[in-house]
Image 1 (spheres, rainbow, N blue to C red):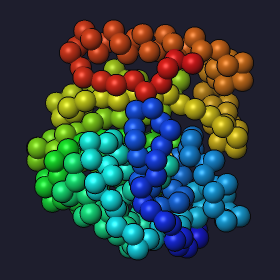
Image 2 (image 1 turned 180 degrees about the vertical axis):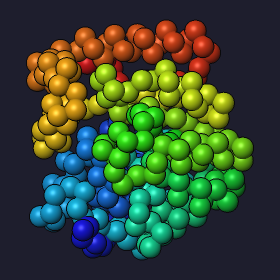
Image 3 (image 1 turned 135 degrees about the horizontal axis):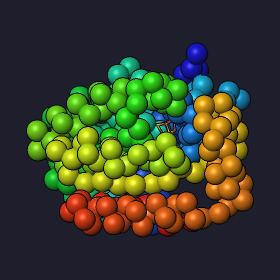
Image 4 (image 1 turned 90 degrees about the vertical axis):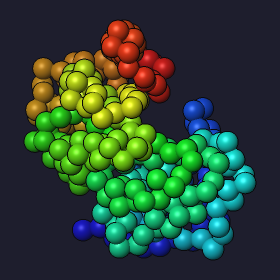
Length: 267
Ligand code: SF4
């Protein structure tokens, strides 16, 4: 069960320290997608909830309209610590209301989701000046997806979503994130999606707090062979695996003329 509540905020726009962005918009606090590896759980400390991350959602409200002048030529991501098209969006429509305000703005808008619901807003995307829509895909195996990302759209639905975006002239991105060591096969994902992806983004798996414990438990149970590798990466902080992965991504994308951005520094 997920506890629903609301929270009043001053502004939907939040200035970010992320180097590749200027502003982020997170229409909800909390994320019901319940990904086993969720990197956003630290956001719990910004809410009044006692429930664990993934078991509550706060719908953000504000009377203030988005200042589109302030974000002229700026990079704005929707969203970074929730899925803007999560299962509560059909009920509350907050993301839709935000998108309606962004239609005529001159910002570079990046939407990131794991949900097919994003297609609901394609009428608005078609009117926007600079919009890209990214579907996060870390793996292609549906059974594994059920274990790691239980409440998000199936992989097949995400692939169909990408295809539809591309067919409708919306810039489509496959966000290969997180790269889960020895589980994410980025080349297979690219092979499967290259006909309907305009660009690829990459980011690595970061593990913190209780989500680190959960992932280690998962690896111990399902992939005991990789346990020492995970220990090396996440306990001993050895950067080698992701440095090599970065080089492999660079080489593969260059050889195959793939447009890409790698958001992790390799450490
Ligand atoms: S979609 Fe993102 S924010 Fe939501 S649970 Fe998954 S990793 Fe966390």
